[in-house]
Length: 115
Image 1 (cartoon, rainbow, N blue to C red):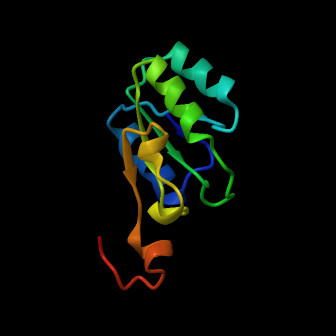
Image 2 (image 1 turned 180 degrees about the vertical axis):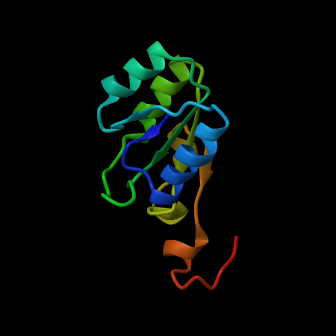
Image 3 (image 1 turned 135 degrees about the vertical axis):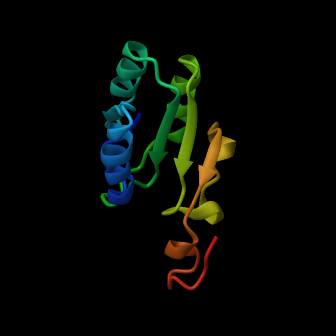
């Protein structure tokens, strides 16, 4: 399951590679916790992926609330923290199981760093 407002490259990956391999992706508005819970309750979902702020719309997602709902249904939570960076947001402290970020955005910003 992933936020409807996800990074375009992520969206393309899910719709091309995952569909081709018969992996189902569910999309939800993560600012609506009840929508997330309804999808988790109705489907066997192993991984929830969110961005906060989202890219491109910069919606703020309550990572702690999403984490609680994910854990209730035994799903792992991964947070793409590229927009906020670890300097201002710490998803692991908010209950995320994984936190990832791109150094080519706000950490470097010039595409001069690879990590």
